[in-house]
Image (cartoon, rainbow, N blue to C red):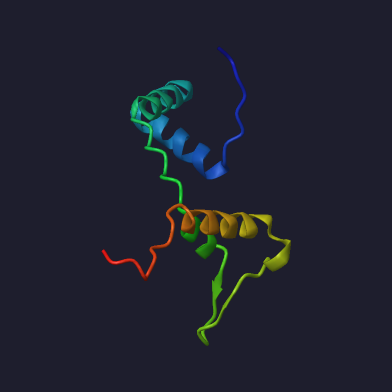
Length: 101
């Protein structure tokens, strides 16, 4: 099958060099590289972050020890993370400090 791909110049140069070194046609080197890449196992999907980790990624930790959220009030994901934290903290009822265990 004939197709057109746009590849970075440095990559194309490396492929041409590899083809010349192996005395192969360019299309054979590309086909072999694609086969090898497709035969490799796919990486496992990353585990989703918990709400605290999601929130922490939005913060900027400054040298003086303060923390800020540069997107602040315009960041809907910030409020989603806070809502998730709030919901997570309410899953189990608080223990009654006056009950004897």
